[in-house]
Length: 384
Image 1 (cartoon, rainbow, N blue to C red):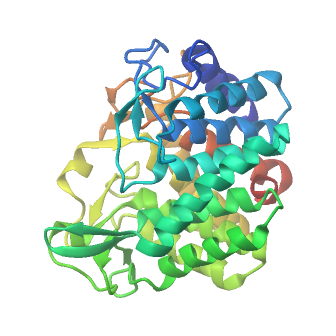
Image 2 (image 1 turned 45 degrees about the horizontal axis):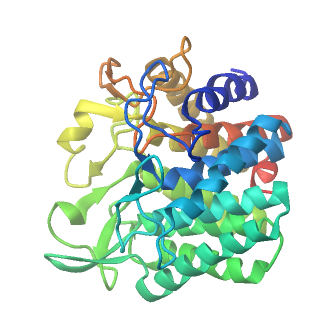
């Protein structure tokens, strides 16, 4: 496949044509198979996520004016939806009025940092850099005080997912080249927590999504669940960090996560990566019924990068197998983009191309990384 052509013509162009909100700013990601908007509510995550995608495409693929314009359209919307306390809401109406606020989640701010930092590299406007740092400081304070902890009926637990998001956020503001020690510190804290926080079990060859506050396995379904998509993300983020720092410990940690992420019955039973698995059994019941798009993207780039770094053919074979199955199941070559969800038999369950949680991020991010590997022989172009 020509990754560059597919990304620019089938993915990036799809969202510019169908989802850009020129009237109010921002992006409406709730689009159907044909690109028609079925709901105008906006997830604020996608201000930062989409800005990151188009800014990185501008910096690494081609300096197209429409990519720059998309970033500016997204940027204009931040002031419309920011809350008086400086926090960003989760869901807003088309004009930016807060519809859902979660004071304990910082996903909107994390992705805002990534997007704003990469947009600053294009526009060189100091107010964009200041806004990126404002949100970075909000997230950094929360993380240092909280370290991904949350309260449940069973007590305080820690979650794996926020740590990998923090690592990626720090990587993509650090690569601007300003105040790098500040961002490097947070990247170090996040990867240290992933490595030593109790999530990785060599005994079970798995990565638990949730552990106790002191890093011990907890009982019940929350305690034995693993999300392969999160583990694959963490794996390739860690390998990227190892490449940037030329650190074999980080590279090998990423490789371990890569190996532990794979469902034990893949590819004998699964042609695609399930959304969740339980170490006590083959997989969670819902994972047997359907597959969603984004874990496939994270697994494909993880295996491609692992092969690039370590040269083990099993990784290229897994990548080839999964890439073929994922494109066969999810890609709509007539209208563009990927479907949201398919059945175990490959039948389309959710034909929508976007939702409040699906937009121009996981798939274009995978393609941007694959283009770096294919065209330069390493991941450095993507990371820098």
